[in-house]
Length: 224
Figure 1 (cartoon, rainbow, N blue to C red):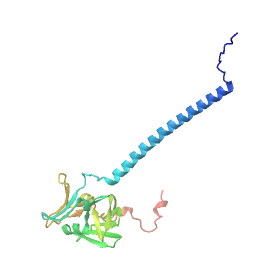
Figure 2: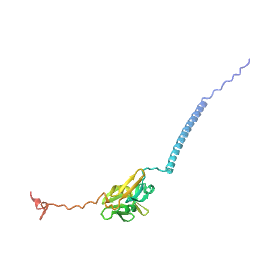
Figure 3: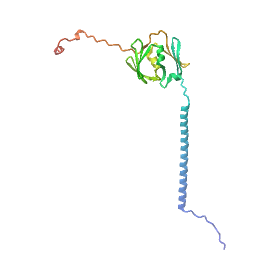
Figure 4: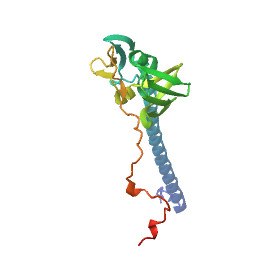
């Protein structure tokens, strides 16, 4: 008889199957972790490039502030000084040099590099200032401004808002089309003053004679 040569497929050992499944699960988990890591790194790279772009733009772009005024100092309808917006402004706002202010108003200055007094010549009106401080004292009235009085290159710089808010007799005019602020005084103008005046001296109280006791101050206290 002829024997049939039938080849049978060998059965895999169950232990081998389990090991193969574990290897596949490990490979799948590793692939998932790798995919998540790649996505995270890509997201991190995008965020980093975006932040770097913002930093680069902030350092290399020019700010366009439409509220920055140049400054004209005007006396008797003549422009004595023109100050560019770049020179007239700083991080605190718009300023006028004291020497320019003294040319159009009867302001004097006394003091040193740290503390000064601006005073209206011929009056008792005064503004006490400390270098680089926003606290001023106008006729004994302390005021806190949003901008400090500055001292730079041997010159005191006065915030224009101080003139605008606390000095009368000087006009501060803003031209919004030309972006020019003009500090203006007319010739012969003698009504320049400070809005905060010196406090008046109190007169002594006057009591009638019925409130005055003579002799023993306790004499009337024993009466019923």
